[in-house]
Image (cartoon, rainbow, N blue to C red; front, side, top):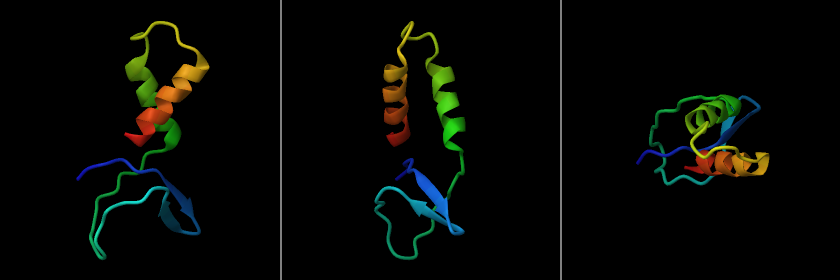
Length: 68
């Protein structure tokens, strides 16, 4: 099962912002990518595909991309 989950770093601990279906002691691989870096990648991929877009529409696309 591969999926993207947002997390926040607080007090030296990476805290997931969503529930995950993992068993106790199960190990996973974590890739750290800053939120702005991820947004920039998505915008570069979508640039020009839909023509001009409002900030609200781009924000909606970004939120959808983050939860995918």
